[in-house]
Amino acid sequence: MKTSLAKHLTQRNLFEVLGYNDAVREVGLMGQTFESLQGRELSIQQQTWLDFVSMNYLHLQTLPAVHQQIIQDLSTWGISYTAPASYIKPSLLPEVEALLAQLVGAEETVLFSSTSHIVNSILPLLAAECTLLADEHAYFITKEATEIARYRGASLHTYRHNDLDHLESLLKEHAHTGLCIVLTDTFYPSESRFAPLPEIMSLLETYDAFLYLDDAHAFGLFGASPDEAQPLGYGGGGAITYFGLKLDRVLYAAGLSKPFGVPISFLTGPKRTLDYVRTLAPHLKHSSTPSLLHLSAAKSILTENTTHGDAMRQALLENIQRFRTLNPDIPFKSPVHTPFQTIHLSEEHARAIARQLQERHILVVFQEEPYDFSKGAALRFVFSSLHTHAQIDQLSQALHEIFAQDQYRSALHAI
Ligand SMILES: Cc1ncc(COP(=O)(O)O)c(C=O)c1O
Image 1: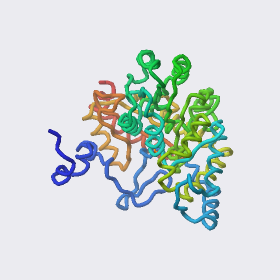
Image 2: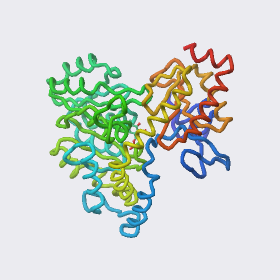
Image 3: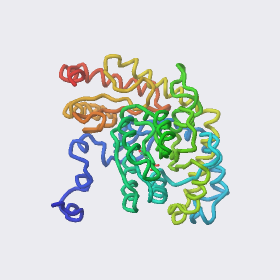
Image 4: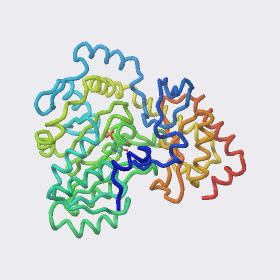
């Protein structure tokens, strides 16, 4: 019998109730609090720590022009205007929507406070009479929203991760019964890989289906016309521009928090669907608009992205390449150009190495039984344009010292 949350709370630490186990807490990744941050250094209990955890990849928000604009806008707009956007909104909001539309090459976009707000608002709204076909590794919040949609009457099926044959067999089975919506993330950072989007798009045509895409990890990072010099592509318009996707069958959601450091998100797709969403989405009708500080930051960061974004993406790429060049003997699971650099190890070794890094005041991501390596654990090093060469060298030196120890060197190749 399942024990209730309330009973757990009286007996056990909240982390255990939420499923974070001792190993994760022991290496200090859950429940950490820092007092200040400077670039990629955190101050934790008055000690300086190197941060290879934050997914804030580009750091355009550190540009002086962005700070000046935010201070200027603060005197015009204040901090927030507290009313739902479907009733009344500050002109900053459609300005940011227009900049986002321009960046991804869409006619228009609709702004929300977060990607979680988008998916929880629109899936139950749009999908009540649909069949939802979700990739088994679609992001947690997408899957939660599909459950709500199911409660409202949608039928829900899961296809094996990135498995086009399985997806096609489900489309064949369900497409004649009504509208099917396929749900996937665009880019899976744990495995540093895109979903097979062009192939999925062609299945949509064949079976007259639609697609919900969560581009949280590619928007702002990947862009148009990737080449040898810049495999991430240019401009940062995300998966749509990277693959040149048409939007007529796509509901596309992405956030500014990872690449641009501003916690707001947007939706785009066919115009008639956006009109419907704008009028009826519960979060636009019943929740406050994003803060004006965030809208101001988004506007100036998107503007700066047009002039400085590619240089930041270049700096990020060079940082990752530097790390890989300094660590030629480590069998990373990620390509040289993606900001999550991953090692797979046994759970015991990964935890011990994370702890050794922690003793050197370096924070990395330790993940037990992740879906890309359910046999053991993953250590992930998350890179940004703001890391300095000295910080990358410090991490590399620490890894050299650790992997000079026999048990860890052999552990690297044992799995
Ligand atoms: C794939 C994906 N989608 C959405 C989110 C959450 O985005 P938001 O903070 O905008 O709700 C995350 C967070 O890490 C994510 O990895």
